[in-house]
Picture 1 (cartoon, rainbow, N blue to C red):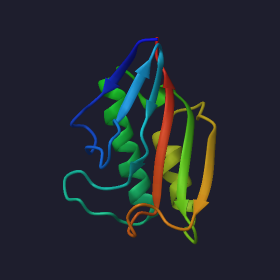
Picture 2 (cartoon, helix red, strand yellow):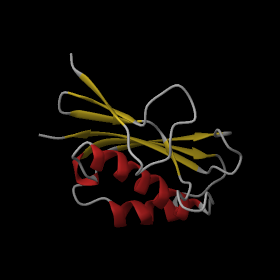
Picture 3 (cartoon, rainbow, N blue to C red):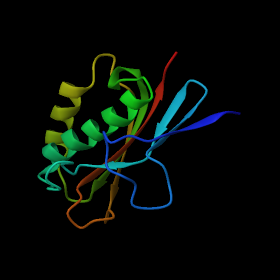
Length: 126
């Protein structure tokens, strides 16, 4: 099976021994993306972090010839005690209909204490 590593300046470089994404056939898998502003390094509230995580994912998908409209599954890790209202509002704005299925897991701690959300997706392209 042919696997192609996806690497782009449109998303932060990985902080460990893994890739931003990988394409296997017509499937694209992204690594989890934090909501960090690529330009300033800042992390905001849950809505801002969701927006930046999706921007980072868009950069990876774009490099592989896909868009958020090609996403067929999303997994979201949310820091416990963080509300999901702003996350859901950004989600509705950024994903076209039909929106992909989503699993959400509330966790006690993400990699960085400032992180409120981390998102990974699977997309399908022709």
